[in-house]
Image (cartoon, rainbow, N blue to C red):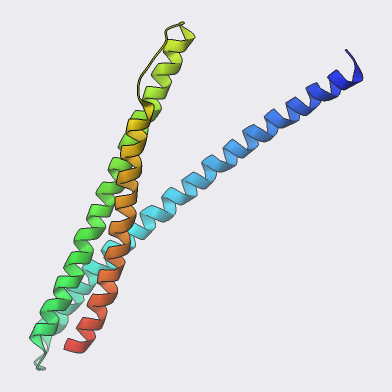
Amino acid sequence: MTDAEELEKINRAIALEDYRAYVEEGSQRLGFQVDYSQAGLRNLQLVNGGAVIALLTIVGNTSVDFDYRSLWWAFFWFGSGLALSLLAYFGAFFSQHFFMQQTFTQAWDAQARARGIVCSTDQMKSFRHGNIAFGLAIIFAIVSLTCFVTGSFVALEGL
């Protein structure tokens, strides 16, 4: 083996090791992303649900005259934010369901190719559905946060 071939072999081994390290780091970062996403969705539920409970507590325990129309709208915004945060959870769940289906389809296709069988399954169908569900989850989460902020201002007006 020549020096150039030996050097090429070493470079390929280093590149393969780099590939494995990058994939591992990407997997870890995905785990962090999932943790942050779950915390964000939980907090959206907490702040919207907590706001409803806080308003009910304030209204039920004081004799101050409130602007009940504003409070009704505050309840509406907080309740909408709570419902949208739940829809964001469902969107996240279904996105992972579709991505899992895609992964299993890829695994089955790889197994078939290993046996010499040619596959013609549409692996992108589940991926597209997963991206749609993922996008909806993000939209629901952003609108949920917007509902909380709106409800907060409306509640301040009513109190």
